[in-house]
Image (cartoon, rainbow, N blue to C red; front, side, top):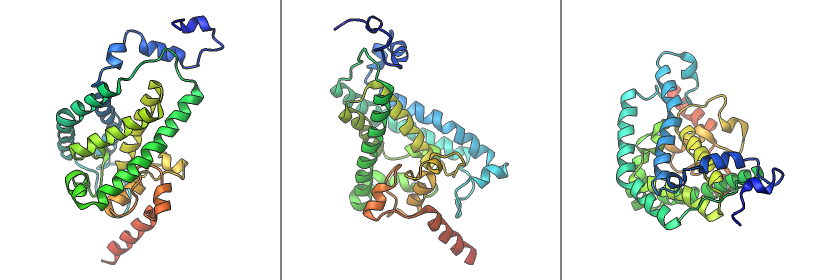
Length: 278
C-alpha cells in the first residue's frame, strides 16, 4: 500500500501527479494547518481584486475603462479611500471571527493528503460538482436572508450598504455572513469528498467569480459573455439594486425556476429611461 507512485509506471500515474508531489513535498504541516483555508481565502481575494483596483484608478482618466462600467447611473469608480476603508473592515472580520471559526471547522474535518493526484477528468467533475452544490446552497441561504427580516438585519444588511458594488466589497459583509459563505464553500468540497487539488481549484475559481460578480464592470472577456448559463456582474449588480431578484451567486437556473430572475439589460434600461425623463 505504501508503494511509491513511480513504481506504478507512467501509464498508471495521473497527469497531475508531478504537480501534486511537488506540492506535497515537505509541505504537509502547512497544507494541513487549520488556518490555511481562511488565510488563503483572504489573500486570494486581495490578489484577485488588484486588477480591478487598477481599473478603478484608470477609470478617472480613461474613457474606454469608463465605457465598461455597468450602465444606469452606476456612477464613477470607487475612490482609493473607499478601497482603503473596505480593506480594514474585511481584515478585522477575518482576524477576529472567520479565521478562528474556520480553523475549528478544519480541525473537526481532519483533512488528509492522499498520495495519488486526481485524474484530469476527476478534477473537472469535482470542480463542476462543487460549483453546482455551492450555487444551490448559496441560493437557499441568500433567499432566506432576504425573506427573514431578523436574518437580513443581523447577517446580510451590511453587505447591501453597497448599492453599487466593487471588487473588494465582495467580502465586505458581517462576520457571520463571511463565515457562513466560507463554510458553505468548504462544506461543498467536503460533502463531495473532493481531492485536495480539486478543492484548491474550486476555491480559487470561486474567489475569482465572487470578485468578478461585484466588480461593477461588464467586461468584454467576462465569463458570462461566453457561458449564457452564468449571470456575471450585471446579474449581481441588479440584485444590489433590486434586492428581491437574482439571488444565485453564479448560475441563473434557480432564479429562472423560482421566478426571481430579472434580465439585467432590461432593468438597467428602464432605470436609464427614467433618469433621462427626469
